[in-house]
Every structure is written in C-alpha cells, then in structure tokens.
Length: 169
Image 1: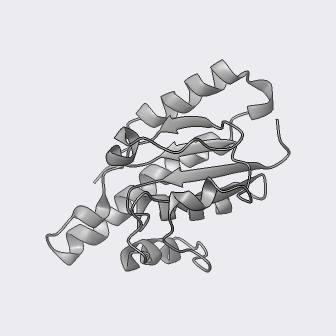
Image 2: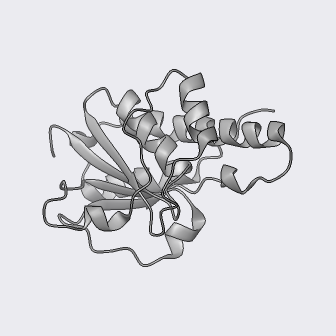
C-alpha cells in the first residue's frame, strides 16, 4: 500500500458533512492521509456552521471549499485510495469511475444542514455530525492498513460505516 493515502469524502452538496470529514482526516491522519471532499451538486460555499464546529474543536478551516466531484475524475487529479460517501443521497447516486479504483465505503451521517428549527438545534446537529465523523475517522486512522488484504479492509470499512456512534445527549 501507499506511504500516504488519498481519501475523498463525497456528499451531494459538499457544504457540511464531507467538508467536516476532510478537515478531521487531515488533522487526525497526521500526514499519513491526505483528505479531500467533493459533491455531485456542490452548493458553492461551505456552510458557516460547519466552519464553526471545526473551529470550536481546534481544526483548521483554511482552504476548505465546496467543489464538484468531477475535479477528482480528471487526469491530473490525485490517485485516490479510498472514497467514502457520507450522506444517503450520495450513496444511491452513480459515481464516476475513479482513477486507480479506490476502495469505497458508505458512512452515512444525518444532514445537519437539513435542520431548520432553532439555532440551538442546528448547532447541536452540526456538533453531532462532527462527533460521529470524528469517531469513525478515529477508528479508520488506527487501522493497520498495510496488514489487511483488500477483502478484509473492505469489511472493516463497511463495519465502521455501521457503527452507532450517536453521542449521548
């Protein structure tokens, strides 16, 4: 396997969950991973509450942007080792063929941007998404990737996506 793994997080709008996942993996991966995020229909801006939850948790937000997944299917795109969908709609969509045939898994997270009630509820939803992604990504970065064959690795990644990591209220 590679000395550094390129990981793409996908979500339809690329404004919240995939952005949070990108920042988390770049932080938790400590140079072992390079994370990216993209969406099929990017909204064109990062949700301010996603940036807020990242900053509140001490993560960098510089350079984060909402972008199309087509950027990662071009010839000059980085070779991807893993592609994770983090929202249900992205999991059901037909994704491009990624160069290098990365390992794919679905790690569905409820959309915090869909919460339209009070500001407190919206902030709580973004915090919950952050905690769920943090838990899953923490498990991922601690896998001994070089010791797993592709079948075992796929099984582990799928299992991570099914963990109930909903934080206590």
